Length: 494
Ligand code: NAD
Image (cartoon, rainbow, N blue to C red; front, side, top):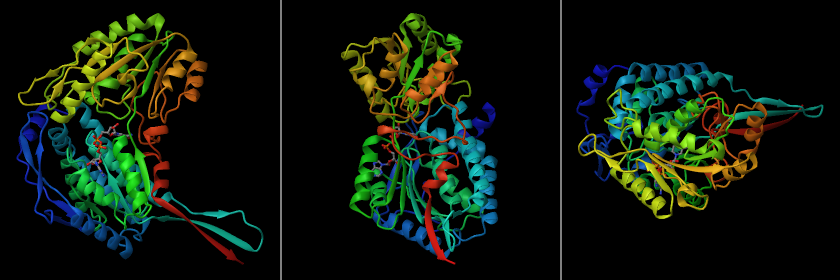
């Protein structure tokens, strides 16, 4: 990643965007559009189409038609695999363009977006390309004279609704396994970050994905998202986003065709530091980035730091120094450590959370205010609170911003109790030099992921999903394929 490479792309004009339906780019039937405003400087980049019910209908019909015709679902697995690999090739060939486009749209620091967005998206397509011809049915151990076959079949039409924080990576986590399983897809990106996914859709067509197999409808959640969630001909809805929207999707399914709904929701993930951690300096550095990277807009962010009292003051001092020294700035500058907050709306939410925490008696050690390293943009100084108690809003509710809450504990049992004192269960971490304690904590913490002596970074080979109100089902790994397959029994008298 070179600054000149980024500078050559950062001011390219972006045309107004249509939607991809049945292999054709089209405006919304209503002609309505939404402005795309960059959080870097508050300037409008372009418009996206604001899809309504008729557009979503057309996209679902195209997906259903392509599925029924078998242009993808019945294509030889080896051919499907080649096309998914070609999509990965195209993403790699357009790596810089995709990364810069995404950052202009959502403000993530380029150092992070470079790896996490096109880098992971390409890797995800490759991983699932390799799965296409390795999904077998089963023969059951049935009584003599009978044969029980268990077929694994593509389900049909998958609706995917994704958020703005890592649109390409999370989009790929849904699209690639759904396609690998043989389904057709209708994708609804966030209205706050559609551009890189629209570009990906064109790259998929260029790579030979047949028309109608991947359709993209842009627009608001209330219009386009809701129309997809309530559609009678969508078989599966796979979602990443907030808890309140997740609840609405379950309701929409119940009130329409009982489509399967998979939810990857938010969290308030505990990061537990024991006094026997092997390297407190390293633990502080990684923990700081575990909450502050991408301005805290990371579903698995370690937002609740539980520190053993014997090292509490030393650890908070270390964090204080790190938080105060992080370079918040233009996300397209390669030396920036923390980029922009995704929108002025999200920044206002973050600032309100800081104010509430102060009103409730938490102590703001550093940061917490709005910054303007680029005129017109939305930026925030990483905030560190200590003196947080378990009943405070900051200990209970997700901010989705660069705000860290520190709570002390005395013994391991207290750490477990505090870690699990949450309605969420997405990620967590434990810092300890004791192997036994590490394994005890892995078993005791209620979460989909427990990191040990690290935070973040699990690759595509392992699942990501939450328990409790952080959701159900998993993205990533071979397990994600199960979401997009149906089991069918053939019971045969021999
Ligand atoms: P959001 O729920 O507001 O929006 C997510 C998507 O849902 C967007 O595409 C939006 O347009 C759509 N949507 C909104 N209202 C809808 C409705 N009524 N019907 C259908 N669709 C609707 O979330 P966000 O603000 O984009 O993202 C932040 C949230 O996502 C945070 O809570 C974060 O923790 C969560 N998240 C979770 C994961 C994970 O893997 N668990 C990953 C990233 C983000």
